[in-house]
Length: 226
Length: 225
Image 1 (spheres, rainbow over the protein chains, first blue to last red):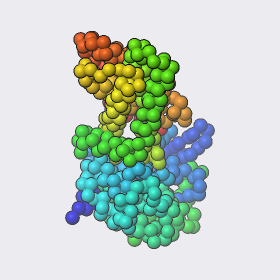
Image 2: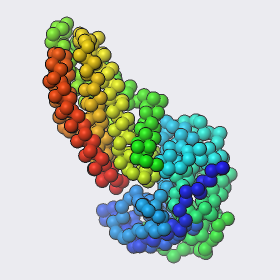
Image 3: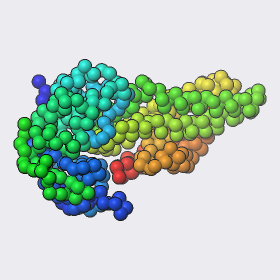
């Protein structure tokens, strides 16, 4: 039996210091610090345009910060393996979910047969052979998460992973993310879903206007894995 | 996973998508065929003149078809930001470039074969044994064009007006390939095999040079933001 965790690298540690991103004179992010390690689930919370997506893209290495520094340690040789799912699905729509996951697994040096197991865990095995172009938004969100997990990432960075999902599907995603944390992966999630972030997160960061703000009453407290 | 295995997996993805959608090859083949038909109509039934014009017309049609194919291939990766996922997962990002070169070479090579066959029918070219020697010229040209095309795509991918910029960046870079390709094919049609071999050598050097440059520059050129 293959395991999704079979090539994980335990002990990943992220330290982001003084992260700043300016678009012209617009401050998207200002002097944000964050430290987290594998196994933690970090919820990034805040209203629209608070800098959540910018922070996540910078952590993933897809957007260069204007200032500040990110260091990853404990990932062994080479750069850490980071999987990111943003507002887009990052899928090839002419391929099937199975083909998308198999490709991701192959490129990550993993057994592509893991794709079937992952689709089953996400409850979308029935859609495995259909082209992504014909799938619903909710199904595509789960396929996107499966593609990210197929790479056995050290860090899993997700922007609004519960968007477009019904309650049952969102609960499946919560369980899969909790499982990723138990496997030693660092999971960073930006979400507006307070209830699920409470269930899931071991650490919360509240952003407002691009700055880390004191947590409001809805986000206080350190929460543990479900 | 080795670089070669990554390249094979990514190129297979491009080819599989192209076989399903036929967007790149369909649009490029239509463009090339229209160019040949228009030249045939414009020149009229002058067999010698059509034969003289054929190589230039085919290569120019190919250049514009290259822009179409390259753009379509890039859209596959950029649609729904699939490229970001590839960028993060690829252990060696040169694999993304080399895979694009492989898939573009395959499509452009097959497109050229089709254009030459169409030219035999429409432009009154006679198929002779020497034309078999066109095959290595076709594939060398396709490799050179694909190497430049994949690098040009990386250079313009983040631009707001990518489709406008692509031909501006790509076509001047393809001039050496155009000159050598026309030279080789004219020499072959005239039965000057030695001359064609000389042009073929130039094409080989161009292709290797462009591909090497692409390997060196790709990661810096394609890096997100």
